[in-house]
Amino acid sequence: MKLKPKLLSLLQHRKKEFPRERIIADLTAGLVVACIALPLSIALAIASGVTPDKGLITAVVAGFTISLLGGSRVQIAGPTGAFVVIVYGIIQQYGLQGLLVSTLLAGIILIIMGFLKFGAFLKFIPYPVTTGFTSGIAVVLFSTQINDFFGLGLTDIPSAFFAKWNLYFQSFAQTSVPTLLIGALALALIVFWPKKLKLFPGSLAALVITTIIVKVWDLPVATIGSTFGDIKTGLITPHLPDINLDIVLKLLRPAFTIAFLAGIESLLSAVVADGMIGKKHRSNMELVATGCGNIVSALFGGLPATGAIARTAANIDNGGRTPLAGIAHSVFLLIMMLCLMNYISLIPMTALAAILFTVSYRMSDWRSFVSLFKAPAGDILVLLVTFALTVVIDLVAAIEFGLVLAAVLFMKRMSDVYNVTNADDDIMDEVHHKDDIDAKKIAKHVTVYEINGPFFFGAANIFIDTLSNIKDCKVLVLRMRSVPAMDATAYHALYKIYKRCAASGVKIILSHLQRQPHKMLDKYGFLDIIGRQNICKNIDESLMRAEDIISSAQ
Image (cartoon, rainbow, N blue to C red; front, side, top):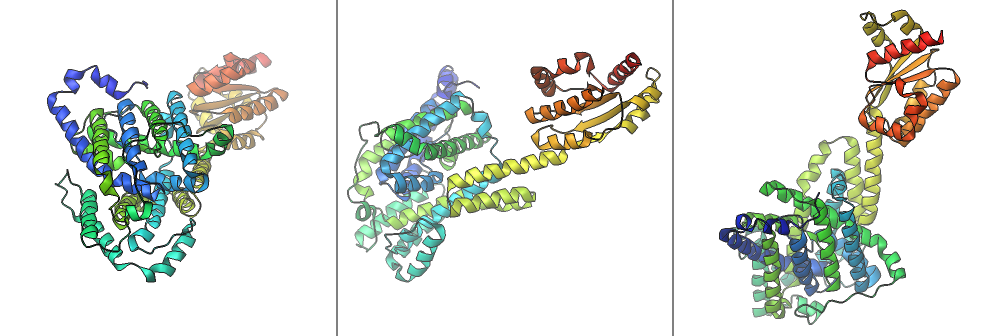
């Protein structure tokens, strides 16, 4: 897959791809998405434990970079809800500088992944794993907003899930009624706001209306200003965070977590977008662009960034069809940031909590979660374990354990469909109808076993156990027409059987060897060991070769 930005490819056909009507549509879509991204970026930054400007900076610089260099026509990038839990944990443990270094390292990792063409491999993450940790993140994100939505006034909230909810239940009696009412109003505005007002979406309406009400009536409701103090305006000068070898080694694990999640979410968003517009993205270029976006974000003091499915879908729905829409979204957002930052401090915290409630709901994708309970028991187990570990421990443990569990279950399924069976009776039925093969010789001196399914380490012991007690014969024919692939462990199992046969004077013939096993056995030199004349195209040729071996031995 080409490592070439999609924008560059489109510019080579600028007359076709950028007519006046499309440029206007892209700019309009960019403006709409900027209006959606403004409140989301603020809310996600605060939920992550940083000031609102960090979220806006991320959407501006990372969003611009990823649209400029990306492999998708319509991807909109920026901070997302999936990163909130990770970012909050990194900041609590390593501080803001630790987050910036982790984001910078994650960007480098993503670029390396893109150049190594890992884009295709990330698509093979099992669906129960992604659904499990995404739903788990949604639950954790929802839990972080209870204090602000109800105005409980808690300052030292435990990070552990059950301890956090235990404190909430003990504190609900001190709920601030004005705060709860403003939060409920914001939630209602988001849910019921007319969808046709695209340039003034529900989340933005909720922020504006609740901010005006709190300010005009001077309600005792916590705001961004009362919580964080003065907010910086504009972009900071890019600078490299403090970094040394010790810090790099300490932060490699969170950096890989950010890179993994950024890669998964970015490519998932690009795949969804492809389905909506009927085009195809360049996955490896998208990884490189996401990596560059995260490096730039870290240099400007921002957060991790990736493709945002909801904002990408909004871009498509509003006519965006080229990377120009994503670039315009970042430019419009920068203008809003410079012009409105003085008013952002007036936004009620409970209104931001209401926005994140809706983000959590969309992230949870509960319909997909519930539908997986129709899957085999193994998939349900992977889903529930990944979900539970995300909620109770952390995302890193959930992904690691979920992938290992999914891999073990996959190997179990593959070994279940693998079998080695004695095919003597079937072969003899065929031989009796052939004039060119001596049925008596074949019946007396030849044993045929058929191998079915992928021949890999999970099936190697089955192979050895089955062939450990083969009857006395002079030729062993292994029919491998149903073996699409084999691995190194399988080869050593086959070699072990060969050594046992050689010690007993039994020749081995391989019948109908497929391409991958043939190539692998050739590399190991096994074809020369048993003799290339003993590699036969089909069972008839194999039996005729066996007859020649028997005749020459007599």
